[in-house]
Length: 91
Image (cartoon, rainbow, N blue to C red; front, side, top):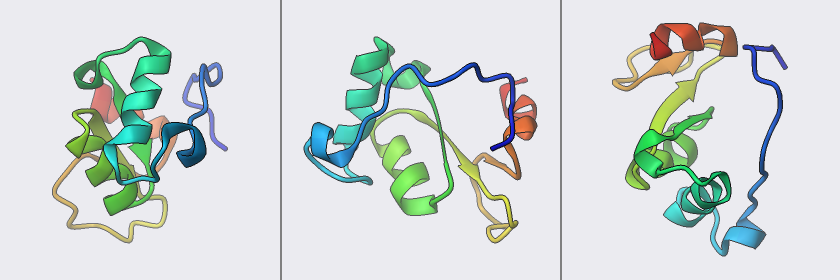
């Protein structure tokens, strides 16, 4: 995994603890609750356009698609090729 200055994870949420799998909003909202962060103030990075990007968006988070192989070149939302590229989204 490439480092983008991320120190580590503060929580890990699975479908078993959230009560539903992605793209349901439950895992995303459980993560926000564990982080004590409002969904609208939470950035979610995932590599699946439906389960990660759309699920996070539907839950009210700010989603970014991690598209390492550039499979989704015409993707209409925020998309990065690697975690180091997050600075282009965050600036």
